[in-house]
Length: 74
Image (cartoon, rainbow, N blue to C red; front, side, top):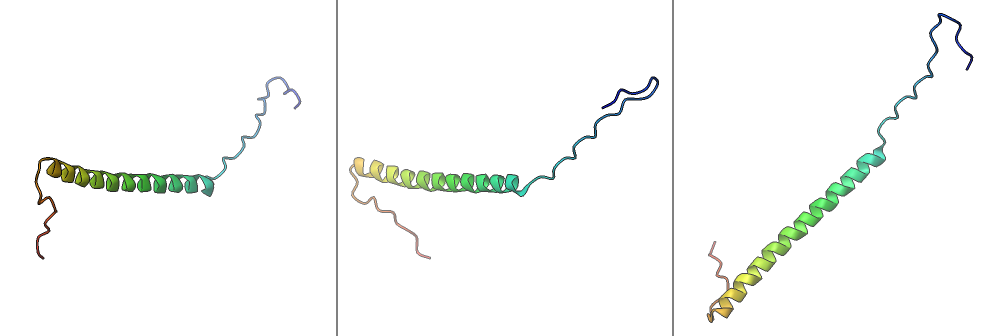
């Protein structure tokens, strides 16, 4: 690049244009969101299952024999 003459403004290099956001970034974010939702679902299911098992064990350890869950008629 040649030197500018006295009193002349130096030319700046043209700025590279910003690339549009690629769909790869969006796909990764969606995949991460799906993974998080699956992990939360499994955690919720596991928590409910372990809570029910704990209640059943507490009932059995207290010496009761009628620990089955009785569902109301619909």
